[in-house]
Image 1 (cartoon, rainbow, N blue to C red):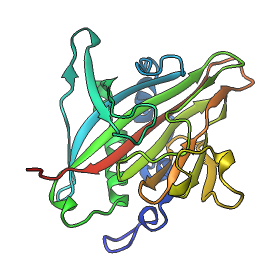
Image 2: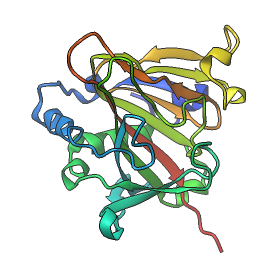
Image 3: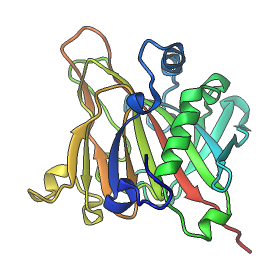
Length: 258
C-alpha cells in the first residue's frame, strides 16, 4: 500500500491506471454492482447534446481532506426542468465557454451506493494538495455518463471531442460497463497538444493509448500535466445498442475569497 509520504504515480507522471474491481474485491455479480448498473438504464439525454448519443446525471459534494468525510451538496430545483446541478468549466471546454451547464441530478440510490463512496475515497488518496488547499474542503463532481448508439452508421461523442484539460486539478474515469462497442479509446498526451486530435500528435509524443474494457477499470489525470481524449464510440457487430458507461470524478480546492 502507498504511504502518505509516497508520491502517487498520478502526481509523478500526470496519469495512472487502476483496477478498482480488484482493489475493492468487487465482482460483476455482486448485488451492489448490479444496483450501480441500474443507474445507467434510464439516464436522461445530456440537455446540451441531445444529438450526440450522450446521457448523464451529475452531483456535487464536499470532501474534507483532514478527516476524509464526504457529504453531498443539495441539488437545485429549476421549475419545469426539475432537480439539476450546475457544472462550470470556464474556458476549458471549447464547446461551452463560460456556460454553467444545468445537468440532471443523480438519484438518491446512486448517491447511497457504497461503490461510489469507495471510488471517492480511492480517488482522493491518489491526490496531493498544498498546505493551503488542504486547509479547506474540496469540491467534488460526480458524473454518470453513458454514450449510446443504435444506428450502424452513427456514433456517440464525448465532450469535447479533442485533446483537452478539464480545469479541475484531478480527474478520474471509471468504466462501469461497455457492450457492443467499437471505439472509446483513451489517449494521454502532453498539455501542448490541447485542442488537437490524436492524429495530430507526432509519432512517439503520446504518453499512453488504451481502452477501458473491464468493469471498474479506471484511470486518473493530473490536469496541469497532461491533456486527454476519448474517441467516439460506434455500434459493434452485435444486435444490441452500443453503450459505454462511466463514472467521472473531479476534485477542486475551495479557498476563501474576500
